[in-house]
Length: 54
Image (cartoon, rainbow, N blue to C red; front, side, top):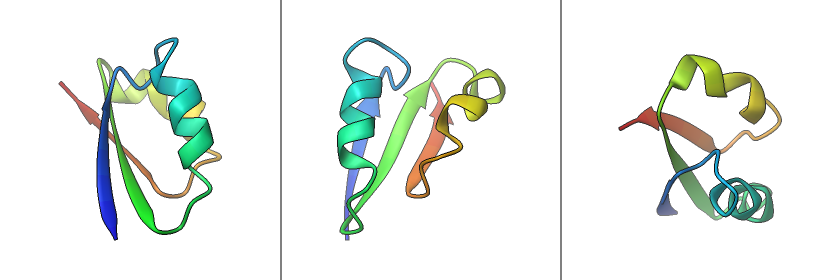
């Protein structure tokens, strides 16, 4: 399984990219966000997305 880090996971490019890749089971997505607590509600539909703060 590949891991992909997307910095700016809630941004104009990062979020649509996560939406495109989230349904693939062969990759694990790591989304870099400013505030994990605020961003969690936006990512509840995606199983293979892990949020990390940076």
